Every structure is written in structure tokens, then in C-alpha cells.
Image (cartoon, rainbow, N blue to C red; front, side, top):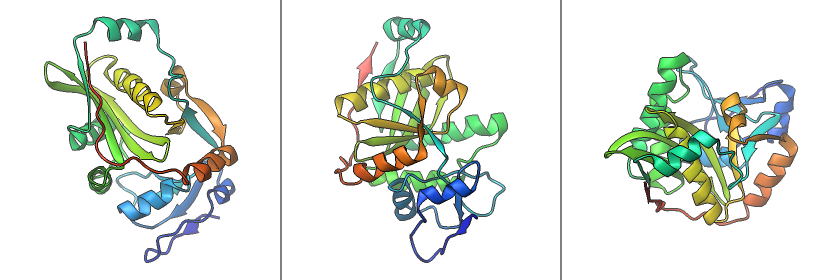
Length: 232
């Protein structure tokens, strides 16, 4: 049974109820506002739906793709890029452009869940100090990046893009380095795919993930813009 949310009350059912759906679909309805989104993430729930779907869909899959900060698998080719390539890493400088590039990349491939409404909502979360971007520049041109939400000591990655080879992997590498330095203990990648698996992500059972989320909610969130900088 998929729960229909009351749009006037910011509340979600327990994510464990999504076991009723094989893919982890929990609820339909609600709103894409900072209050709704923060409430969802603090319960291990995330929105994911296409342009042509009239209402928001909220998910909590049985297996959660996660990676521990500092345990990213770095292929030899990426190590060479890190060592030899002429690039610059920054954070939170062009958040909206990063999320728009992520949307464009997905749209050109096979559609995107990063709708205009979604972009507006996450930009508000960025203004509030919860959403962050890691950006890769080459000769001052943005060539790759990623964005997501930081709550407590868990970072929930949303999407990444690249305009040049390895640019999104570079962003993910420096995200790992930053989170490790700041004592984060988990990166939530949401749903496993071959690309995430190649980078070292593994699947965590839903109950274990939700237990981690519950403990994380007792921790303070260090809000505000990140300071991440690297030149090569």
C-alpha cells in the first residue's frame, strides 16, 4: 500500500512501510519545500519522479547505496588525472549552475527527475546552508560537479555531471576528501548503479540505514557554505 500524504501536514510514514512496494515507493503527494525535504531526508526518504508525473513520489528502497568517506575506489586512470590534469576544485560557488547541468545531462540521456520545481527547492536549501555543490573548473570553465544535502554527519548525494572525462569522478573524489576531513561518517548514494559500484559504493539494508539516520538526527548540522579548494 502506497501512502497518500496530506499536503497540509508535513509528515511521512515510517520508511519501513515501503517494504510493501518492491522498489521502495513509500508515498505520493506532499510538497517540494525545504520543510518537506528536510523532514523526508531526516527519515531516510527522498523524492524521485519524472517531469510528466503530476505529484511527488517519495522512496525508501530496501537496499541503500552508500559509501564511507575516504573509501572511494580510485582507478589508476583517475589517479593520473588527479596528479597531472590542470583543474581547480571549488565548493558552493555556482550551485544553481551545477544542478541545472545535472538536469540537462539527464534530460539529454533518458529524462530527468530534476524538474524546475526541484531545482528551486534545492536552491532554497542551498541558501539555508544545507545543500552543497562540489565544482570542477578548467581554465575557469565549469566542467563537472555534484550536489547534495548535508545533515548531521551524513551527506546525501543527489546527482553529478561531467562535460569532460573524469570531471564528475574528480568532484566525487574531493567530496570524499572533504567529508573525511570534516568527520562525516556516511555518503548516501540512494540507488545502486554500475558507476557507483565502480567507485566503491555498497548496499546497506534499509533497517540498518534507517537506524543510522535516526542516530544522525541527534547530531548538529554545520550549516553554511563549504570552503573547499584545490588546484592542480
